[in-house]
Amino acid sequence: MTLAARAEASPLSEALARHADADVAALRAQLPGDPPVRCTLGAIYAQRNDLPRAMLYLEDCADVGLPEDIAMDVVRATRDVKKRLRDSQLSQLSIVTDPPGLTVEIRALEGEKLTAPITIWVKAGTHTVRAGLPGQQLVSSISTEAYSRSTIYVGGGIRPAPPIKDGRVDFTEENATEQTSGPPPDIKRPSMIQGKYAGDAGPRLGPELDDPLAWHGQAGPRPWFGLRLGGGMYDDGAATSSFRPSVAAAARFSLVPRVFLAARVDWSRRGGTADRAVDSVGASIGAGYTALATRTLGVALIGQLRGDLRFADTRNRMAVSRTGAAVAAGVEVAIAGTPLTAGLRFEQGITELVAGARDRALLIEVGVDWR
Image 1 (cartoon, helix red, strand yellow):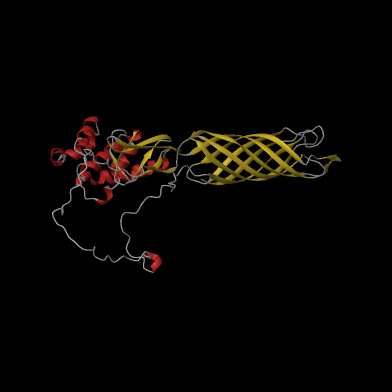
Image 2 (tube, rainbow, N blue to C red):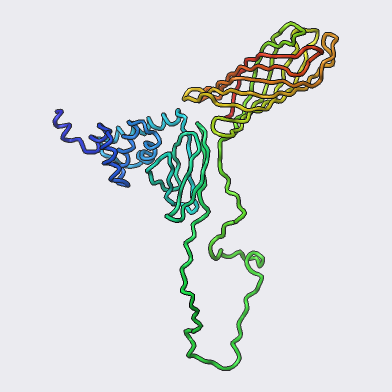
């Protein structure tokens, strides 16, 4: 029975079982090839953990008929690759060219000839896409982040070079031997009011011209917004520490991969235990760095300057400064696949709350994000 099974095995199923370098080279030599060749190559890349190339060749395999000895392996590989890509740090990059149908190249998939428009998976970082014909290459670059979706537009149309002329001018006419006498015939001139101004739009004549001032936007990483609910210990050196609540709205705006602008607006009740608490509304601005990004969580470090407005005149018969400034540092942990975030934040006042005392706080926060 074992010998019979081996006799029925096709070269494709044998290559899929071995998934060696020689099998990859042999299948790539047959490209573009028929669907079984491409799908087998994609399944082999999946076994070799090359997810971007695996998805490139497995993209349409669910819609084509495959030999029975490789069909189930290809189906399982396609399902597994899609799941692993969703959980990975790779990002989706859509490549669009003008005109469409150009062959493009990108170093992230070196050696692959791609036809735009196409969507591929790449690592976070800066990528350069080259498209066009020899001597007329178009180049465009984009920066991507982990878990993001981006689109890059390449070109504004390739125009053929004008024909080379020999520099001679020919004044002869095809009807030079025909001569007529008398006044020229009457020519009926069409109305100068045409098209939509005459009430008749009519068909469009000639090619539609590109607007030279039109802006073709480039999609980048999306902003990150969130809400925070927290509480912690507040102390100002002039009153006993106390546990107080806080509420905040936060936002992140990507600058370069892993580095982002961090902004925040919050309300908190401050001042330690005293005859009267101090309500504070503050705004913070600073920068953050994504120190860790895995399939399950992301960890970011954030540093900010905070300014606040305090809604109290006195506390313990001491005048309260109506405005203040502080420095803040924090760490936030985002759970991948969910909108949940948890964080730890420390704030230290650099101006006085009351005479001789600066407030400080240590907060624990949980929240939800729109990433």
